[in-house]
Image 1 (cartoon, rainbow, N blue to C red):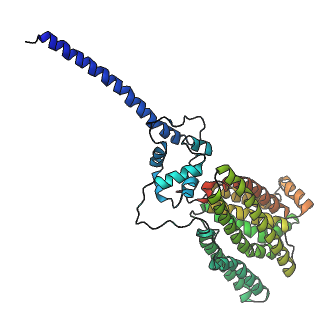
Image 2: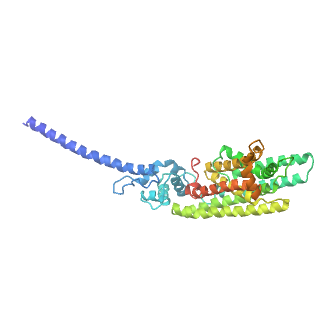
Image 3: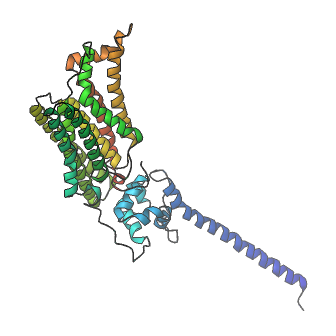
Length: 411
């Protein structure tokens, strides 16, 4: 017979051995859990260089798979690895962050994520990225871009060669037709984007264009004690700005197309930004040259001052604002347009408010500027300053890879 105490001691020994094994298993599971959480922590602190990278020892969790799970929606809607790379950059992933996932850069990491993500084999093949979308040059879009300028030119000619009631009706009808053409161009051409402009952007744009048409004349009359009657509007700058819609659309399409090609051939985010920055500046220089040429032509044909400084600054400001809005950065353009509009409005308000008793000093800054450089110095200074600030912002945002993908919401 077996001694019961012996059986009891054996059972206790087995129980203690099992407890020892269980205790050994606990830390292993805990350590494994820690290795699973390391890539998640890295993805939560994307772009932060101080976070620990994933463990590269055998038997650890797959860090790329963890990242794919965290960005499943991005991988599912992406049509190629470039869109994933742009999305990762929008979330703060840099080339140094990609090194923690055992990749040399974000593009290499995006290639693996795109290749490994499960997809429906019966789904429609992804569309090509380069040369497609709103940036592609199409004959219909090219013709649409010329429509605002042609309608404005017809309105100017009709106004100059009509009398009586038609003389009043032609400008009204022309303004409506030009506004409709501009609205269509901003919705379907290269200047269009997946987002709507902020609510106040259109209003400030209309105000800036109206000031370019009537503001300088009203300011000059106000400084001399008027207006005593109708003043001469500046038709040449407004006509040149509407005609410049065509080169603006073509330059926007050129920038988007060439930036997409640079994105397809780049292997690092810094290299892409370095290659796109001179492209952006070159496109703006090309547009500004075309606008100055149109201003000179319209001024010569209409026998008016071409207003190179103020109309040129306004044209660059409007193009930069539209480029940023079309690529998903609407907030800075809204602030820039509002700032320029408020500055022009205050210049007019101070001139007429200075006529009140004790308020004569209010018009001194505007009077000083106009005495030195004329009434056009006010819009030139307002639009030129805001355009410069917006250009600095654009060189930091439009040179990102994420600016050339379609994200979920404006940034």
